[in-house]
Amino acid sequence: MKVLVVGGGGREHALAWKCAQSARVERVFVAPGNAGTAREPKVQNVDVAAGDIDGLLHFASRERVELTIVGPEAPLVAGIVDRFTQEGCACFGPTRAAARLEGSKAYTKAFLQRHRIPTAGYAAFTAADFDADFVRAQHLPVVVKADGLAAGKGVVICETHEAAIETAQRMLGGCFGSAGNTVVIEEFLHGEEVSFIVVAAGEQVVPLATSQDHKRRDDGDNGPNTGGMGAYSPAPIVTPDLHARIMREVIDPALRGLTLDGTPYLGFLYAGLMIGADGIPYVLEFNCRLGDPETQPILMRLESDLVSLCGAAVRGSLAGVEVKWDARAALGVVMAAGGYPDHYRTGDPIRGLDAADSLPGKVFHAGTRATGPQVLTAGGRVLCTVGLGESIAAAQREAYDLVHAIHWEGAQYRRDIGERAIRAAPR
Ligand code: AMP
Image (cartoon, rainbow, N blue to C red; front, side, top):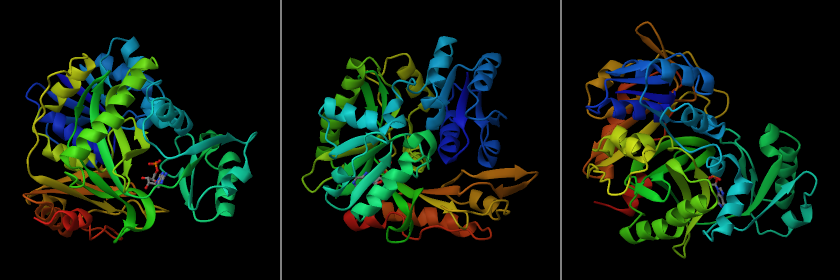
Protein backbone atom coordinates (compact mmCIF):
# COMPACT_ATOMS: atom_id res chain seq x y z
CA MET A 1 0.00 0.00 0.00
CA LYS A 2 0.94 3.66 -0.36
CA VAL A 3 1.10 6.02 2.60
CA LEU A 4 1.31 9.82 2.62
CA VAL A 5 2.94 11.68 5.52
CA VAL A 6 2.11 15.39 5.62
CA GLY A 7 4.86 17.71 6.87
CA GLY A 8 8.59 18.26 6.56
CA GLY A 9 10.15 18.33 10.02
CA GLY A 10 11.94 15.89 12.30
CA ARG A 11 8.66 14.38 13.46
CA GLU A 12 7.68 13.64 9.86
CA HIS A 13 11.08 12.13 9.06
CA ALA A 14 10.58 9.73 11.99
CA LEU A 15 6.98 8.97 10.91
CA ALA A 16 8.02 8.28 7.31
CA TRP A 17 11.00 6.13 8.39
CA LYS A 18 8.78 4.08 10.67
CA CYS A 19 5.98 3.69 8.07
CA ALA A 20 8.56 2.53 5.50
CA GLN A 21 9.50 -0.35 7.81
CA SER A 22 6.03 -1.85 7.43
CA ALA A 23 6.06 -4.94 5.20
CA ARG A 24 2.63 -3.86 3.88
CA VAL A 25 3.95 -0.54 2.59
CA GLU A 26 5.44 -0.26 -0.89
CA ARG A 27 5.93 3.53 -0.86
CA VAL A 28 5.77 6.40 1.59
CA PHE A 29 5.27 9.88 0.16
CA VAL A 30 6.20 12.88 2.29
CA ALA A 31 4.82 16.31 1.47
CA PRO A 32 7.02 18.28 1.38
CA GLY A 33 9.64 16.26 3.35
CA ASN A 34 13.28 17.28 3.79
CA ALA A 35 16.77 16.10 2.79
CA GLY A 36 16.53 13.24 5.30
CA THR A 37 13.26 11.81 4.00
CA ALA A 38 14.66 12.10 0.46
CA ARG A 39 17.49 9.72 1.44
CA GLU A 40 15.25 7.12 3.13
CA PRO A 41 14.59 3.78 1.36
CA LYS A 42 10.99 3.41 0.04
CA VAL A 43 10.35 7.10 0.80
CA GLN A 44 9.77 9.83 -1.78
CA ASN A 45 9.32 13.57 -1.27
CA VAL A 46 6.42 15.31 -2.98
CA ASP A 47 6.57 19.00 -3.76
CA VAL A 48 3.27 19.96 -2.12
CA ALA A 49 3.19 22.21 0.95
CA ALA A 50 1.72 20.83 4.21
CA GLY A 51 -0.87 23.63 4.17
CA ASP A 52 -2.06 23.00 0.59
CA ILE A 53 -5.04 20.78 1.42
CA ASP A 54 -6.42 20.76 -2.15
CA GLY A 55 -3.02 19.85 -3.55
CA LEU A 56 -2.57 17.05 -0.99
CA LEU A 57 -6.03 15.64 -1.67
CA HIS A 58 -5.46 15.73 -5.40
CA PHE A 59 -2.12 13.93 -4.97
CA ALA A 60 -3.54 11.30 -2.59
CA SER A 61 -6.43 10.52 -4.95
CA ARG A 62 -4.21 10.35 -8.05
CA GLU A 63 -1.67 8.04 -6.38
CA ARG A 64 -4.36 5.93 -4.67
CA VAL A 65 -2.83 6.58 -1.26
CA GLU A 66 -4.53 4.27 1.25
CA LEU A 67 -3.58 6.12 4.42
CA THR A 68 -2.54 9.72 5.11
CA ILE A 69 -0.89 10.62 8.41
CA VAL A 70 -0.77 14.32 9.25
CA GLY A 71 2.26 15.58 11.20
CA PRO A 72 1.79 19.29 11.96
CA GLU A 73 -1.11 21.04 13.67
CA ALA A 74 -1.86 23.77 11.13
CA PRO A 75 -3.47 21.55 8.45
CA LEU A 76 -5.41 19.69 11.17
CA VAL A 77 -6.78 22.91 12.63
CA ALA A 78 -7.58 23.99 9.06
CA GLY A 79 -9.70 20.85 8.52
CA ILE A 80 -7.56 18.51 6.38
CA VAL A 81 -9.12 15.40 7.94
CA ASP A 82 -12.67 16.62 7.23
CA ARG A 83 -11.78 17.26 3.58
CA PHE A 84 -10.03 13.92 3.06
CA THR A 85 -12.85 12.03 4.79
CA GLN A 86 -15.52 13.76 2.67
CA GLU A 87 -13.66 12.53 -0.42
CA GLY A 88 -13.42 8.99 0.93
CA CYS A 89 -9.65 9.17 1.65
CA ALA A 90 -8.51 7.63 4.96
CA CYS A 91 -6.71 10.29 7.00
CA PHE A 92 -5.31 9.77 10.47
CA GLY A 93 -5.80 12.86 12.61
CA PRO A 94 -8.55 14.81 14.38
CA THR A 95 -11.28 16.72 12.56
CA ARG A 96 -11.18 20.49 12.60
CA ALA A 97 -13.69 20.55 15.46
CA ALA A 98 -11.64 18.10 17.58
CA ALA A 99 -8.38 19.90 16.73
CA ARG A 100 -9.71 23.00 18.51
CA LEU A 101 -8.13 21.39 21.58
CA GLU A 102 -4.87 22.76 20.19
CA GLY A 103 -6.25 25.59 18.08
CA SER A 104 -7.92 27.50 20.94
CA LYS A 105 -6.60 27.67 24.48
CA ALA A 106 -9.75 29.40 25.77
CA TYR A 107 -11.89 26.58 24.32
CA THR A 108 -9.58 23.99 25.90
CA LYS A 109 -9.64 25.62 29.34
CA ALA A 110 -13.46 25.65 29.26
CA PHE A 111 -13.45 22.03 28.04
CA LEU A 112 -11.15 20.98 30.91
CA GLN A 113 -13.31 22.70 33.50
CA ARG A 114 -16.52 21.33 32.04
CA HIS A 115 -15.20 17.78 32.18
CA ARG A 116 -13.47 18.22 35.56
CA ILE A 117 -9.96 17.53 34.31
CA PRO A 118 -7.21 19.07 36.48
CA THR A 119 -5.76 22.32 35.09
CA ALA A 120 -4.54 25.71 36.35
CA GLY A 121 -7.13 28.35 37.30
CA TYR A 122 -7.72 30.92 34.57
CA ALA A 123 -9.84 33.60 32.96
CA ALA A 124 -10.17 34.49 29.27
CA PHE A 125 -10.54 38.02 27.90
CA THR A 126 -11.02 39.85 24.63
CA ALA A 127 -10.02 43.47 24.01
CA ALA A 128 -13.61 44.48 24.82
CA ASP A 129 -13.67 42.97 28.33
CA PHE A 130 -9.99 42.90 29.39
CA ASP A 131 -9.73 43.45 33.14
CA ALA A 132 -6.31 44.67 34.33
CA ASP A 133 -7.49 44.47 37.95
CA PHE A 134 -8.07 40.73 37.55
CA VAL A 135 -4.44 40.38 36.44
CA ARG A 136 -3.21 42.52 39.40
CA ALA A 137 -5.06 40.20 41.80
CA GLN A 138 -3.13 37.10 40.60
CA HIS A 139 -0.16 35.52 42.36
CA LEU A 140 3.16 36.00 40.58
CA PRO A 141 4.37 34.85 38.16
CA VAL A 142 1.34 35.15 35.90
CA VAL A 143 1.04 33.10 32.70
CA VAL A 144 -0.35 34.94 29.67
CA LYS A 145 -1.39 32.91 26.63
CA ALA A 146 -2.60 33.88 23.19
CA ASP A 147 -5.71 31.85 22.41
CA GLY A 148 -4.76 30.64 18.92
CA LEU A 149 -1.74 29.12 17.19
CA ALA A 150 1.25 31.43 17.54
CA ALA A 151 4.14 29.26 16.32
CA GLY A 152 5.12 28.25 19.86
CA LYS A 153 5.59 31.87 20.99
CA GLY A 154 2.14 32.50 22.41
CA VAL A 155 2.89 31.66 26.06
CA VAL A 156 4.63 34.27 28.23
CA ILE A 157 5.46 33.80 31.90
CA CYS A 158 5.44 37.26 33.50
CA GLU A 159 7.28 38.08 36.71
CA THR A 160 5.36 41.33 37.38
CA HIS A 161 1.73 42.34 37.06
CA GLU A 162 2.63 45.27 34.81
CA ALA A 163 4.53 42.95 32.44
CA ALA A 164 1.52 40.60 32.35
CA ILE A 165 -0.88 43.46 31.57
CA GLU A 166 1.43 44.81 28.88
CA THR A 167 1.88 41.33 27.34
CA ALA A 168 -1.87 40.70 27.29
CA GLN A 169 -2.49 44.11 25.73
CA ARG A 170 0.17 43.47 23.09
CA MET A 171 -1.52 40.16 22.20
CA LEU A 172 -4.96 41.76 22.16
CA GLY A 173 -3.46 44.55 20.03
CA GLY A 174 -2.59 42.05 17.31
CA CYS A 175 1.08 41.08 17.77
CA PHE A 176 0.08 37.49 16.89
CA GLY A 177 -2.69 38.50 14.50
CA SER A 178 -6.06 36.92 15.19
CA ALA A 179 -4.41 34.26 17.45
CA GLY A 180 -4.40 36.98 20.13
CA ASN A 181 -8.02 38.15 19.78
CA THR A 182 -8.61 36.30 23.04
CA VAL A 183 -6.02 35.91 25.82
CA VAL A 184 -5.96 33.42 28.66
CA ILE A 185 -4.57 34.59 32.02
CA GLU A 186 -3.50 31.54 33.96
CA GLU A 187 -2.19 30.58 37.36
CA PHE A 188 1.50 29.49 37.32
CA LEU A 189 1.97 25.84 38.26
CA HIS A 190 5.09 24.38 39.87
CA GLY A 191 6.23 20.83 39.27
CA GLU A 192 7.76 18.64 36.61
CA GLU A 193 6.57 18.65 33.01
CA VAL A 194 5.73 15.41 31.24
CA SER A 195 4.52 14.73 27.71
CA PHE A 196 1.89 12.00 27.54
CA ILE A 197 0.90 10.92 24.06
CA VAL A 198 -1.78 8.44 23.02
CA VAL A 199 -3.33 7.11 19.84
CA ALA A 200 -7.09 7.62 20.15
CA ALA A 201 -10.17 6.57 18.23
CA GLY A 202 -13.26 7.84 20.01
CA GLU A 203 -12.95 6.45 23.52
CA GLN A 204 -10.56 3.66 22.48
CA VAL A 205 -7.00 4.46 23.33
CA VAL A 206 -3.46 3.08 23.06
CA PRO A 207 -0.89 5.02 25.08
CA LEU A 208 2.52 5.52 23.46
CA ALA A 209 5.76 5.12 25.41
CA THR A 210 6.33 7.97 27.87
CA SER A 211 8.73 10.81 27.12
CA GLN A 212 10.07 14.11 28.36
CA ASP A 213 11.62 16.97 26.44
CA HIS A 214 13.91 19.89 27.19
CA LYS A 215 12.34 23.15 26.02
CA ARG A 216 15.01 25.68 27.03
CA ARG A 217 17.84 26.38 24.62
CA ASP A 218 20.79 26.29 27.03
CA ASP A 219 22.34 23.73 29.37
CA GLY A 220 20.80 23.44 32.82
CA ASP A 221 17.35 24.29 31.38
CA ASN A 222 18.32 27.94 30.97
CA GLY A 223 17.88 30.47 28.17
CA PRO A 224 14.91 31.09 25.90
CA ASN A 225 12.09 28.63 25.30
CA THR A 226 12.33 26.71 22.03
CA GLY A 227 10.30 24.10 20.19
CA GLY A 228 12.43 21.52 22.02
CA MET A 229 16.19 20.86 22.22
CA GLY A 230 16.05 17.15 22.97
CA ALA A 231 13.90 14.41 24.45
CA TYR A 232 14.08 10.92 25.86
CA SER A 233 11.84 7.92 26.36
CA PRO A 234 10.86 6.48 28.78
CA ALA A 235 10.32 9.28 31.31
CA PRO A 236 11.35 7.83 34.70
CA ILE A 237 9.02 10.23 36.52
CA VAL A 238 6.01 8.41 35.01
CA THR A 239 5.76 5.49 37.41
CA PRO A 240 3.09 2.84 36.78
CA ASP A 241 0.92 4.59 39.40
CA LEU A 242 1.26 7.98 37.76
CA HIS A 243 0.62 6.40 34.36
CA ALA A 244 -2.65 4.91 35.63
CA ARG A 245 -3.58 8.23 37.20
CA ILE A 246 -2.96 10.19 33.99
CA MET A 247 -5.12 7.72 32.06
CA ARG A 248 -7.89 7.87 34.67
CA GLU A 249 -7.87 11.61 35.42
CA VAL A 250 -6.85 13.12 32.09
CA ILE A 251 -6.92 10.91 29.00
CA ASP A 252 -10.10 8.88 29.58
CA PRO A 253 -12.24 11.85 30.68
CA ALA A 254 -10.88 13.97 27.82
CA LEU A 255 -11.79 11.36 25.20
CA ARG A 256 -15.18 10.80 26.84
CA GLY A 257 -15.75 14.56 26.96
CA LEU A 258 -14.86 14.96 23.29
CA THR A 259 -17.31 12.21 22.37
CA LEU A 260 -20.04 13.71 24.59
CA ASP A 261 -19.43 17.14 23.03
CA GLY A 262 -20.04 15.65 19.59
CA THR A 263 -16.39 15.90 18.47
CA PRO A 264 -15.02 12.36 18.89
CA TYR A 265 -11.24 12.27 18.58
CA LEU A 266 -9.13 10.36 16.07
CA GLY A 267 -5.36 10.69 15.98
CA PHE A 268 -2.40 11.32 18.21
CA LEU A 269 -3.41 13.26 21.31
CA TYR A 270 -0.59 14.89 23.23
CA ALA A 271 -1.20 16.09 26.77
CA GLY A 272 1.41 18.50 28.13
CA LEU A 273 1.20 17.93 31.88
CA MET A 274 2.63 19.50 35.01
CA ILE A 275 2.96 16.96 37.78
CA GLY A 276 2.46 18.97 40.95
CA ALA A 277 4.00 18.26 44.35
CA ASP A 278 0.53 16.87 45.23
CA GLY A 279 1.00 14.25 42.48
CA ILE A 280 -1.92 15.61 40.47
CA PRO A 281 -1.40 15.65 36.68
CA TYR A 282 -2.48 19.16 35.64
CA VAL A 283 -3.06 19.75 31.93
CA LEU A 284 -0.98 22.65 30.59
CA GLU A 285 -2.05 22.10 27.02
CA PHE A 286 -3.27 19.58 24.51
CA ASN A 287 -1.66 19.16 21.14
CA CYS A 288 -3.57 17.44 18.40
CA ARG A 289 -0.45 15.75 16.98
CA LEU A 290 2.82 14.17 18.03
CA GLY A 291 5.45 16.29 19.73
CA ASP A 292 8.73 17.20 18.09
CA PRO A 293 11.34 16.11 19.25
CA GLU A 294 9.55 13.50 21.45
CA THR A 295 8.43 11.59 18.36
CA GLN A 296 11.98 10.72 17.34
CA PRO A 297 12.97 8.78 20.51
CA ILE A 298 9.44 7.35 20.91
CA LEU A 299 9.34 5.91 17.39
CA MET A 300 12.90 4.57 17.78
CA ARG A 301 11.44 2.34 20.51
CA LEU A 302 8.29 1.31 18.64
CA GLU A 303 8.56 -2.30 17.50
CA SER A 304 4.97 -2.68 16.23
CA ASP A 305 3.78 -1.66 12.77
CA LEU A 306 2.83 2.05 12.86
CA VAL A 307 0.76 1.84 9.68
CA SER A 308 -1.33 -0.99 11.14
CA LEU A 309 -1.80 0.98 14.36
CA CYS A 310 -2.96 4.15 12.60
CA GLY A 311 -5.07 2.12 10.16
CA ALA A 312 -6.82 0.34 13.04
CA ALA A 313 -7.58 3.72 14.62
CA VAL A 314 -9.05 5.08 11.38
CA ARG A 315 -11.31 1.99 11.21
CA GLY A 316 -12.30 2.58 14.85
CA SER A 317 -10.96 -0.80 15.92
CA LEU A 318 -8.19 -0.01 18.40
CA ALA A 319 -9.65 -2.24 21.10
CA GLY A 320 -7.29 -5.12 21.78
CA VAL A 321 -4.45 -3.68 19.67
CA GLU A 322 -1.13 -4.58 21.33
CA VAL A 323 1.82 -2.28 20.85
CA LYS A 324 5.34 -3.56 21.51
CA TRP A 325 8.16 -1.32 22.68
CA ASP A 326 11.91 -1.85 22.71
CA ALA A 327 12.77 -2.09 26.42
CA ARG A 328 15.85 0.06 25.84
CA ALA A 329 15.84 3.81 26.37
CA ALA A 330 16.08 6.25 23.47
CA LEU A 331 17.40 9.79 23.62
CA GLY A 332 17.42 12.50 20.95
CA VAL A 333 19.64 15.60 20.82
CA VAL A 334 18.49 18.49 18.63
CA MET A 335 21.22 20.21 16.62
CA ALA A 336 20.04 23.74 15.83
CA ALA A 337 21.26 26.53 13.59
CA GLY A 338 23.31 29.39 15.08
CA GLY A 339 20.99 32.05 16.49
CA TYR A 340 18.01 29.71 17.02
CA PRO A 341 15.34 30.34 18.33
CA ASP A 342 15.64 33.97 17.17
CA HIS A 343 17.09 34.91 13.79
CA TYR A 344 19.10 31.95 12.61
CA ARG A 345 21.40 31.20 9.71
CA THR A 346 20.39 28.92 6.85
CA GLY A 347 22.22 27.56 3.81
CA ASP A 348 25.25 26.22 5.71
CA PRO A 349 26.64 22.92 4.33
CA ILE A 350 26.33 20.05 6.82
CA ARG A 351 29.37 17.75 7.02
CA GLY A 352 29.70 14.29 8.53
CA LEU A 353 26.27 12.83 7.71
CA ASP A 354 27.84 9.84 5.91
CA ALA A 355 30.19 9.20 8.85
CA ALA A 356 27.18 9.39 11.19
CA ASP A 357 25.34 6.84 9.03
CA SER A 358 27.96 4.23 9.90
CA LEU A 359 27.48 4.75 13.66
CA PRO A 360 24.77 3.14 15.76
CA GLY A 361 21.60 5.18 16.28
CA LYS A 362 19.73 7.35 13.79
CA VAL A 363 19.94 10.93 12.53
CA PHE A 364 16.53 12.43 11.80
CA HIS A 365 16.47 15.57 9.67
CA ALA A 366 14.24 18.58 10.34
CA GLY A 367 15.31 21.86 8.70
CA THR A 368 17.49 20.53 5.87
CA ARG A 369 17.43 20.65 2.10
CA ALA A 370 19.55 18.95 -0.53
CA THR A 371 21.34 20.54 -3.46
CA GLY A 372 22.80 17.64 -5.38
CA PRO A 373 24.79 15.49 -2.97
CA GLN A 374 25.20 18.39 -0.50
CA VAL A 375 22.83 18.81 2.45
CA LEU A 376 22.30 22.39 3.67
CA THR A 377 20.71 23.81 6.80
CA ALA A 378 17.23 25.17 6.04
CA GLY A 379 15.56 25.76 9.40
CA GLY A 380 16.09 26.53 13.10
CA ARG A 381 16.07 22.96 14.33
CA VAL A 382 18.19 21.14 11.79
CA LEU A 383 18.75 17.56 12.99
CA CYS A 384 17.84 15.27 15.87
CA THR A 385 20.37 12.53 16.61
CA VAL A 386 18.85 9.59 18.45
CA GLY A 387 20.71 6.93 20.41
CA LEU A 388 19.43 3.73 22.02
CA GLY A 389 20.84 2.08 25.13
CA GLU A 390 20.21 -0.12 28.12
CA SER A 391 19.89 3.07 30.20
CA ILE A 392 19.20 6.72 29.44
CA ALA A 393 22.91 7.36 30.07
CA ALA A 394 23.86 4.75 27.45
CA ALA A 395 21.36 6.18 24.94
CA GLN A 396 22.79 9.63 25.67
CA ARG A 397 26.34 8.45 24.83
CA GLU A 398 25.18 7.01 21.51
CA ALA A 399 23.24 10.19 20.63
CA TYR A 400 26.24 12.45 21.40
CA ASP A 401 28.61 10.21 19.38
CA LEU A 402 26.38 11.07 16.42
CA VAL A 403 26.41 14.79 17.31
CA HIS A 404 30.21 14.78 17.44
CA ALA A 405 30.43 13.26 13.95
CA ILE A 406 28.41 16.14 12.40
CA HIS A 407 29.50 19.75 11.81
CA TRP A 408 28.34 22.98 10.25
CA GLU A 409 29.14 26.63 10.84
CA GLY A 410 27.36 27.89 13.96
CA ALA A 411 25.71 24.57 14.95
CA GLN A 412 24.45 24.64 18.53
CA TYR A 413 23.14 21.93 20.78
CA ARG A 414 22.72 21.24 24.47
CA ARG A 415 25.31 19.06 26.15
CA ASP A 416 23.04 17.82 28.92
CA ILE A 417 19.99 16.25 27.28
CA GLY A 418 18.71 13.54 29.62
CA GLU A 419 20.73 14.62 32.68
CA ARG A 420 17.53 15.31 34.61
CA ALA A 421 16.35 11.72 34.03
CA ILE A 422 19.79 10.25 34.71
CA ARG A 423 19.86 12.02 38.08
CA ALA A 424 16.32 10.87 38.85
CA ALA A 425 16.90 7.22 37.97
CA PRO A 426 20.55 6.19 38.21
CA ARG A 427 20.99 2.73 36.78
P1 AMP B 1 1.82 25.54 26.55
O1 AMP B 1 2.00 25.82 25.08
O2 AMP B 1 0.52 25.99 27.09
O3 AMP B 1 2.20 24.15 26.95
O4 AMP B 1 2.97 26.39 27.24
C1 AMP B 1 4.32 26.30 26.87
C2 AMP B 1 5.18 26.14 28.08
O5 AMP B 1 4.94 27.19 29.02
C3 AMP B 1 4.88 24.86 28.85
O6 AMP B 1 5.57 23.77 28.31
C4 AMP B 1 5.34 25.22 30.25
O7 AMP B 1 6.76 25.10 30.36
C5 AMP B 1 4.99 26.69 30.35
N1 AMP B 1 3.65 26.85 30.97
C6 AMP B 1 2.47 26.96 30.35
N2 AMP B 1 1.46 27.12 31.21
C7 AMP B 1 2.02 27.10 32.44
C8 AMP B 1 1.49 27.21 33.78
N3 AMP B 1 0.19 27.38 34.00
N4 AMP B 1 2.37 27.12 34.79
C9 AMP B 1 3.69 26.95 34.58
N5 AMP B 1 4.24 26.87 33.36
C10 AMP B 1 3.43 26.94 32.30
